[in-house]
Length: 175
Image (cartoon, rainbow, N blue to C red; front, side, top):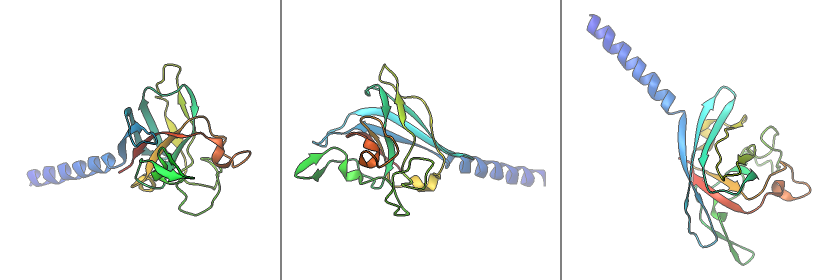
């Protein structure tokens, strides 16, 4: 009888542990260019919290400063054609916007769900500071891509569209 109880308890604990593991994922991030070549830049781990999803980067070789950081619609980091020119990371599509708001209101607004807080890169080119996305759930991230842009993001469509961020420079596909 005790063996059966022990077995049931073990199965319950294992099931709970597996549930917790399902609430974390790691994305391999690579630099992107218009030719479709890429080089490893590191990883970003993300996990669920009661406050939203926390992204913890472990990246290197990036330009120092603040960079726009978003969830993009497509699970593809390849280049694409825009205005007759190949553009790095364009196959990732636009910012994740399942509600079709068409608005760039930042991580706390009611616009694109894929708008994340800016990613900070230290003077040595490493990014390790966690970022909290309060509106996201783990299920929102499956089958999309994470994108880091050159330059900052003002989380507005003014004075420039999509926060005025620069080119797509680092990308990884979520699973």
